[in-house]
Image (cartoon, rainbow, N blue to C red; front, side, top):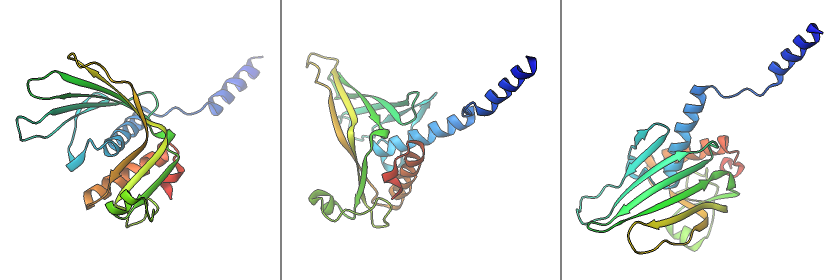
Length: 197
């Protein structure tokens, strides 16, 4: 009986799915947060976030004191392919508005690119996202991005809105580097086949 129990326990240890080590989870979380920042255009100009545990905080850059300020907190849930963002937008002397959004990258069903902004606007001559000519990338999928706005003043709250498309640019060398890195980690982590083409 003891021998059977030992064999059973050994089989369970061998067959039990290996859980990611803490270091692996941390690396995946960092890479996925960077990828989300690229897609949501939080890291434009190579802006680095302030880290708050497993979340990143981005601040808008504005030289004009009359310009609105935006603070965005990005964090991952239990699924590394789903991110939540909390953003507060405030105009000087006015109440802030709070935006809460969810982005689910497993919903991506297609990914195409265009060689120019004109091609993007006209939706002509789409090319693969890994084509060296790719300058504008379009990701689509049902319910890819959903957001709600909550006004802290008296303006009232807006109904939740969902969109099925995310666009991002790869115009210069830095954007190309960040964009390709983002697509690679999303393709592998979220099993998005259209980003491998």
